[in-house]
Amino acid sequence: ESLHVMANKYMIKCKCLGGISSRRQCLFILMILIKIRPYVMTNLELCEGDILHGQTATYTVLRFLGEGSFGMVVESIREAEEEVRLLSFFHNLIIGQLDSERCNVVQFKECFQYMGLTCLVFEMLNMSLWDLLKNHRPVLSISELRPIAQQLLVAFHALKDIDVIHADLKPDNVMLTYQPYRVKLIDFGMALTTSEQGVIMQPAAFRAPEVTLGCVYDFPIDMWGLGCTLVHLLVGTNLFPCCGYQSIKMMVDLLGMPPEDMLNNGRYTKFYFTKEEDGQPNPRWRLLTPDEYSRVNREDPGEPGPLQNDLTTLDDLLNVSALKHASHGAGHEVRPDSTDQPPSIQMPSQAEEVEEGGEIRSSEGELPQTELQTELMTKQRGQTRTVDMFLVL
Image 1 (tube, rainbow, N blue to C red):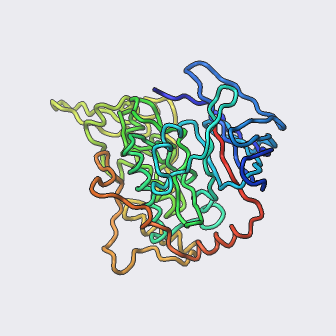
Image 2: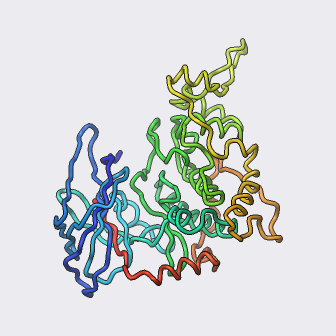
Image 3: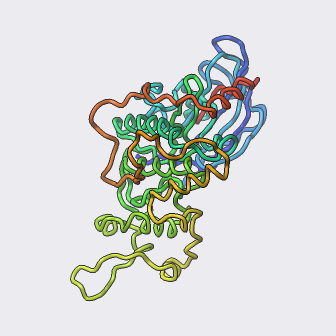
């Protein structure tokens, strides 16, 4: 059954008035995701001083912090010695089935009701990969990307086992933890168990072609999102543009035409491709030119992405990465170790999934000790405030 959420997210700072464990105050976040039925808008307003009663604590709203896309978020203080937490409305169907530490996903803590809405409490983690790029390191090296990729594959393997597609992978939704130093997958606000043809999911720059074309999609769209996320971490910018036409054009330039069956079955194929009527019994698809796209869709095809003129193959990303590291003075290797085989970068195809054979163990993928880790851990120890929990309704 489709879950609909209000397209507003507010972050509100709250103060927790009581808890069942120790009386130490800890900062936390209350995230409220408002489920709505089609054409029915649910309005929930929280003001400074409003009180929410959980099963183990009471939370008082202090202030709004910002807004986003899929619900409401508030920041609060909780008088209980707990670890950092995060929330989302769909997690009651997902997280309860997973060992969060083993599977590298955010940890579920508690659940309560507020004004008829379900509020879920999760650990709130220290820093997202987006924060890492923005505030500490504009690019990462391949040696730093390897354990990140491995740990996210563990998470997606676990989600596939319970038939869940995350559908929202991007650097913002991968969080760093420090004990141990590793990553965890968060924000299941767009997660789903089945694909409804034509429903557009995933952030635009991380969107798989089968989603853009309006095909039925499955777990491989998360593998596509993972590849795009790793490229973003490697070169500090998106691989594909956010514009639909330019994104599809770049995919065709780098990877070739999508499979014929994908084009034939796509609900939105005609917005990007046309069939060559050359008298052949089986006319083949081709990409619309920018002018044709403008005429068909009555909109501008958009501008090429920042990497569109720098890449002829995906392997060119290694050269772009070397230039990025040199310009930022990163001082970390870009090429693989000398013992590795020559690199070849590939985006996963629709048929490729996480390997089935054998169990993938997250304990083997702890992030290596690097200058980056030392820097971040030093800054973390210097903080006087403990961010404690996320809550989502």
